[in-house]
Image (cartoon, rainbow, N blue to C red; front, top):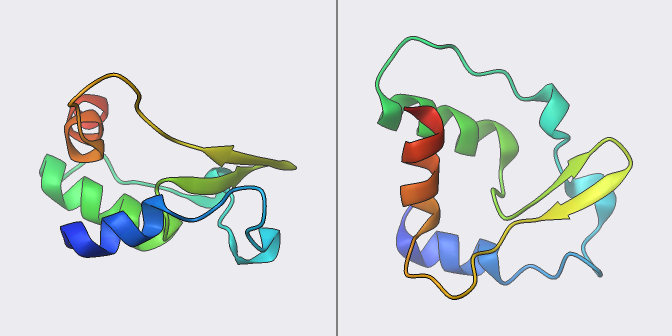
Length: 80
């Protein structure tokens, strides 16, 4: 996934998105072995859009305000 792809995914409106097209986070399973980059790729391949996904009956929108931290930075921190 490149920056252009991520920018498109970031612009998905969590209010109007088709809920049926979203992946439920509870269905995502990441193996603990491998590098951070490998685990990040696995998350992205399973969840499809890291900015908008489902958690049970809820649609979750991820965003960062007032910071220069990127999603990649946050994912690396989460996976370390």
